[in-house]
Image 1 (tube, rainbow, N blue to C red):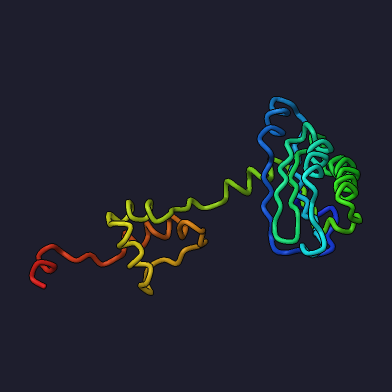
Image 2 (cartoon, one colour):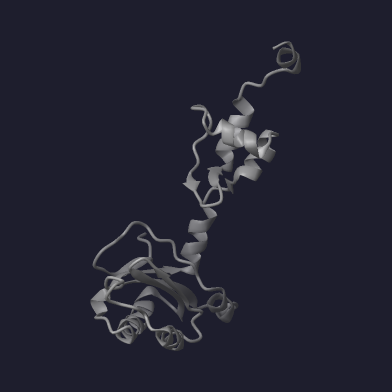
Length: 198
């Protein structure tokens, strides 16, 4: 069976995007049989030297999406807008999202084609995706698993047999916890007597 998540319209795609269902949109529909659809819209902005979003535009965008738990995040040369729609199925979600996206681009003084990527996913599908994500560990967690210091983790990172991080964040690399535990179980350990005689 084909997945119900889809791109409503794509003029350009810049890699996989993960949508977040705004918490207040999820709370508003708890206990109902209606699906919540998370809609993520990437709006391409003109070059920064020629285009600035006026502060009141953010207020107008919030007003358009009132009650839908909007998240509006400026990024380099684009604006990412996430909001929730409460409807029965994907077709109804597309019908409701289309005019909203047009209002968003119009409010910014841009053509509808500026919405370069629109992704819709139901909360059930999002929960399924998130449940398949591996547990991750930062430097502190890796140190605890291995029984070493954080400084030693950074030293181990230089070893070719040490697991490679799956993501590098500003604060720390992230490893799959299972990879670190597998390494811990198979790594050679120096005995205290051999360490003392060296």
